[in-house]
Amino acid sequence: MYWDDAVIFGLVTVAMMVAFLGGWIAFIVRDHRRKKH
Image (cartoon, rainbow, N blue to C red; front, side, top):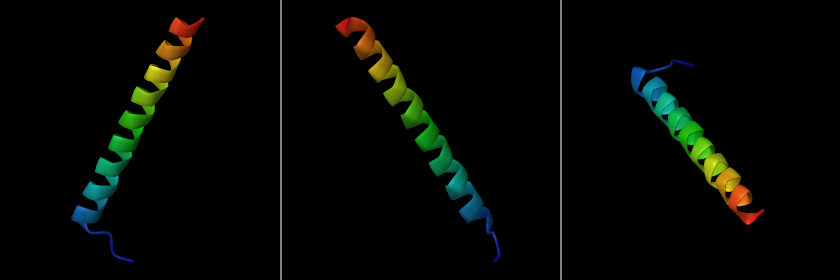
């Protein structure tokens, strides 16, 4: 299987987006729980 630069770039972009969204959701959930108590 040949890994093209575009494929690698796309996977890196998706990985960064998933990591960013995961961190953002974790921040919102943590802040919401903190305000609830």
